[in-house]
Length: 453
Image 1 (cartoon, one colour):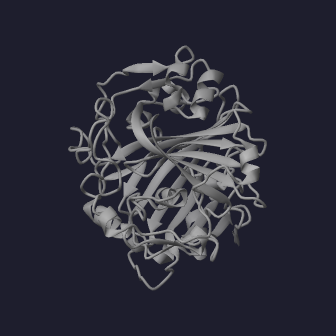
Image 2 (spheres, rainbow, N blue to C red; image 1 turned 120 degrees about the vertical axis):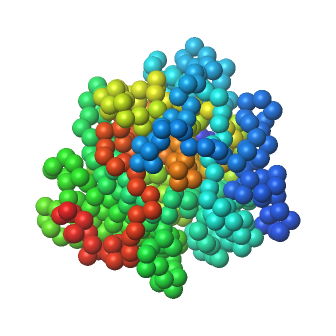
């Protein structure tokens, strides 16, 4: 499958592409829709009449038996698929799938999409909702769209006017303030053989530091630290990132600690299409979290909104009774444990700017309206061929009021391999929210301490 390179060459691919013009805050009249016909986050409150229900505040209760230990129980364990999309009926449902999802179904006979009843489970803390409403009339894009002005925590553009605003909503979305997780990543061979790489990740928003000073590091959005804990040959290597808001004026600050060399060095390659950590060439740096980093190499088009079958409420994928051997299969994860629902998504198209370099010439990104999380991304190469397909199997961390991902999967249609990141089934203490971290924990000097624990 190809995108139209003729339109790309003539600059006519998107009439609504962002240019150097200023975009930003909506009027007070528009913002008044938030909390009325729109949720505080900007999603349509109303359903579609039969398949998508109206939003009623998100999940109302925590499943009985949950021990507040980060081991999440499936609140929909008793439900069965309404139907399954496979090679025999994919044409019937193709308008509610991405081209990449259709390609996966056609490539693999056992890659099927089980469709369950839709539940709009996601909600946010009241403080995040109120900050989002305030952002709607205040936040503006600056530096050609590569930075934000007047931004506070939460979603900057709940009523997006263009593709750049929509992708900024994904980049900045709330993920709990300060969290630590222990996860595994696999890059199976074509025959399904794999060796997990295990990470301890830390993610802390600047405003959630215990020693937060609003006048220090004002251009930093969050701090991220990732230590490899297994296998032994990689254990002790640590990555540190200071994620800047305007990465063109001030590029992302990144350092790595190499345990073998016992030294810290700057890591400018941790950006754009630089290689992902321990990914065996199966993802770029900006594939992490589906998409991250500076948006300056692409033109961004807000194609519109559509109804689409996307991974959702994926609690079976974190079941402690499910082993990695059961989940990781040749070509793709075991789709028997996945769950898809019909949701409204924003379709955003990123097209590589003339003169810029990236291995992906186009990305078609489908962002869930309730959470601003990218759910599916189709990646095209420089020839215009569909190359990689990313799916984010999301879940709602109901005790924390945090929508996030259970796992992310990136499929390579050409090589027949894939990468799955965020696996927790066999990990101890998979998620810890509310961890206390100070600015001192995210200095280059802290890297060596993290690598020798």
